Length: 531
Image (cartoon, rainbow, N blue to C red; front, top):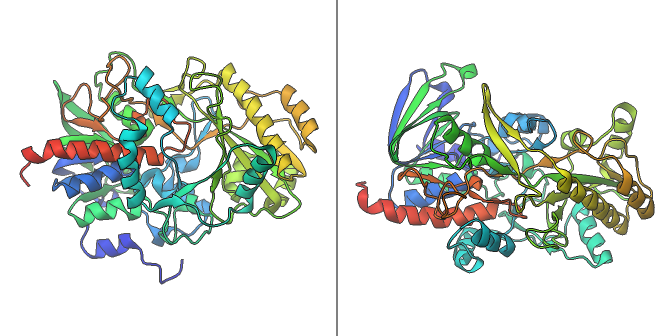
């Protein structure tokens, strides 16, 4: 990237920030702090800044590497292995759902597409009525949303949407459907469209360039490439953590941690598996119950160039169908678009050989829409289950008939919208289905096409749940402030705390709820800690 782009991480490390790359350690080490935070994504980064501001000694432990704008070259071949879980190739146990999740300092905030949406009122009301969540209403969360929106420069995107997003907007306008201009956490955005590969100009206000530098500036310590392997506990207290550096890159040092308080912010897959591996109490079998917003894709071909790789990846969404039948009714879906990059699209489209090659020759004229199915609100869509394996973990997520019914409706919705926006052809991303040349043909094809596991491409970039919050122990693992029901010095502050999916992109919900809960925790810890 241009030499005049200042990398705040590089500059901070030169100035003396405390960072240890565990992969380079030659000896085992022990660390102590007031608070140890596992994970540096939306939850861990937010908590770290608030707790250091309160005068607490904080250590952040991250399983992934420390990568920053000096490393971000806008190439998929480098970004996916460097910045994503399993090089962006993670899947559910049955291979039916591909999962995108960040794995570097900053977590998924380093690679997400900047969409920032407040928690829907319908979700908050459902949590209060059905999941025993207390004190989290739109009104009570308003100051926390406002605080984090100010902190991360979250505001409505002021530029024209790129053509990929414009198609969603224009289709909604033609059909009379609702749509919204997205708020984004950016400052001085260059509008390149490569958010998913790490922002090379530090415009994205991820944890990597905001709260983590703030915490480090105030004396926090960051340890990267250190994966938590054990959580020790006795009676109602966590007594320590153990982490290992990767064997492949060196000694494979063992790191041990002792703190007055521990926060798990390792994400909706790893927070519950840390607790499972440690045999922590789970009397109601709640750990690892996971929600994904399982997502369908629909491609379309336009006469004009779409150039979906260029410009803000997401700037328009539609909630026309997400809550149409109420929270517990038929499964609803949110309409958005993804960025269109070669590897991403090649791996998520269908066909082989000649048909696939032909589609990729039309790359610049390709428009893609996605439908995110809102899961976890009824027995129709119970979500999935994380389980431990000999080599780590697996996620079982059976896609049942109500989901496939929603998928068929979503494919029809997306096709109708794409034709309304001016597409020449629509390609539902489902095996055995060719290009549809008009809405009537698409409608008939979608009504009868064979959809199902491994025939239909299903993806997820929103892993939620697994360590649900609430006041009722039979429904939750932590209370509504994130404090464990079973350990007095353990909190959970990440997307695993959600009792259902959100029906909205999750980062702003995590920021706001964690800001609230970390502030309450800081107030509890401050009087008893000698700094």
